[in-house]
View (cartoon, rainbow, N blue to C red):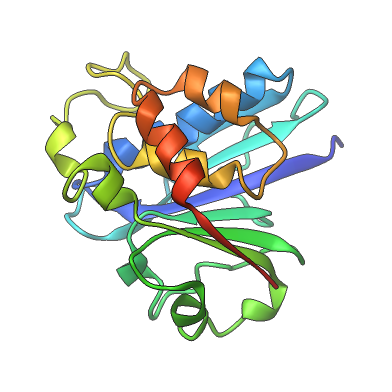
Length: 204
């Protein structure tokens, strides 16, 4: 089986469901531009139809064709992105994470503050913090209209709000996609660049 790089994205149901999906799509599209085989999808084990319920989105990259077509969860992520830092407390966001996993968090807090809330932080190789809400303008939700659904054509541009700076921040610790390709894949190109520029990386 091909060597697959797994990405798990944590967001909240309804209010950030679409933006979480956009984050996975932008990263997958950027990796594809770099010649990778990719997959991006929602997690059918969660409850995205319920407001504020923590849920996951996923994407995968490989240099070879990915055979895991009917495995609907990432069991061993090497990159975890958290779109709302309040999700971290009380939820095992690093479940199954491989040694050296990078964590990207949308937060105003420092990496040290985030690490205090994570019980199994020994698997982490790096923590990246970025204030994606401020970069996107407020909460970032003002840019969303809740149109579009998985499997259909998006009614708005992909990568408009908080997904853009989070994708930019992810380029600081992940070599599966380049900043240039992420910029090319997201509608909010300035947001991607600002996310990469202002992200703070703590290596562990």
